[in-house]
Structure formats: C-alpha cells, structure tokens
Length: 291
Image (cartoon, rainbow, N blue to C red):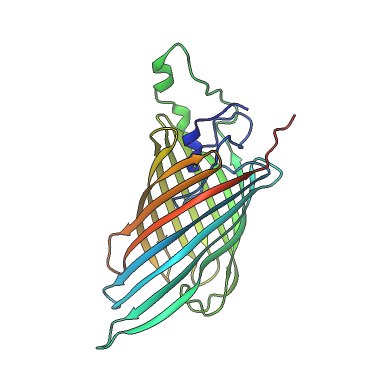
C-alpha cells in the first residue's frame, strides 16, 4: 500500500491519500481537538485516545468557581468495512465547586461522567477515493497549485447513544437513562498540509438538554512529526450555552503513538474558563490488506 504523508495522518485528519482504503501506515487520531474526522481508523485497527485536563472556571454572575481535573477517552475499532468504525467515548470530571454568594464560601466536592457515549461512524462519501494524487515529477507548480476538487469534502455520519446516571451535577435536572446522539462530519484536505474539519452535532435528542454543537478545526503540518491546530467549538441548549477557542500541537512519536497538548479558553465571564490538556493516542494495528 502506498504511504501517505506521515504527519498528515499523525493528527487525525489524513487518511485519504491511499486510493482504495482508509487504513493508513501511521496513526490517525482525533486528538487533541474535540472534532472527529470523516475517516475511520481502518478495519481491524484498535485505537485508544485519552488525556487528562486541568480546569479553572469562575462565574461572575452566579458567584461561583470550579477547580478540578478530568479524564477524557475514546476507544475506536474499525469493524469489517474500511468505512465503518465503532466508538466508546467519555469524559469524567472530579472538581471542587465553591459557592461565593455568602460571607463564608461553601465548598462541594463533585465527580461524575460529563458524557458517556457508544456509537458508530460510517463514511458515506469519499471524494478522494479514486483520485490519483501522486506527485508530478516534472512540475513544481502542478504539485502546489490550488486543487478545486479539495473544496468537495468527505462526509461521514455518526449515530450513537448517551448514557446518563441520575443526580449528575454536570447535566440538567431530570436527565437520566439513554438518549440519542447524531453527528455529521466533513473533511477537506487542502494543499500545503492544511486540513479543515467540520462537525454538526445533536446531543441528548428529545430531552431538556438537547444540545446543538458545532466544531470547526483547522490543522497544519509543519513536517513529518509536528502539527498545530486551532478549533472553535460552540454549544447551545436551554441548559447551557458556550463558545470556546482551542489551540495546541501534536507530536508523532512513532507510527503507532501520538502525543499532544492543548489549551481551551472562552470570551465571557459566565463562566470564564481555562483548560489545559495533555494526552496521547496509541494504535494496535491488526490490519491486513486484502489479497
């Protein structure tokens, strides 16, 4: 199988230079951003993506603050078809909530899953599948000119379920049990190692915390090991609304291991947030090419 550019795949978003498959020679991780690419990890590939974060929030209007730590994780498995991927993902947080409305502050220790999901993603359209993207050995300009077909994105759909327990401090009152989750993910691969990812997400459909989310991620690979990203993430529901800016970097240690770090900030004080993340992704490569 023809190799793709290693760094493009190192970050997540680049499984498209192989002509007939999504499997790639190096790890294809969704970290450190929160968006997911249109492409799967490839058949018979098991991948673990996890990280720890430290958070600091302060709400000026409600007069409270939160400090704590959390763990996010995703287990991805390429099942049978190159286009199909199963996922188990979650975010677990442990923090100290401080109520500052009285003369003496009141503190509460909290811990629970902010999110726990099981689902599957399927690639429904791949514009790169039958395109010969091999380099032109005779023309520099042919290799570097803008490719108009890059404006047509790859498209995948994700469907899953949220599983929420009772009396969770991180969800709206009354949220418990199982609720649907749905995502449309698109991916554009541009010249000069730029990749654009867009996610449109509906969470906890049919509940009183029916979140609509959008995530737009732009990544750029500097070389065969380093990539940077910037991401905007919006959340809107009757329970909560937020707009966050995320940026960070990822490092390809070897073909099966990626390390990363990132920061998250916002532009309001209801609440004002600051997160710092450290994590990594590891791939168990059991893939075999078809004869």
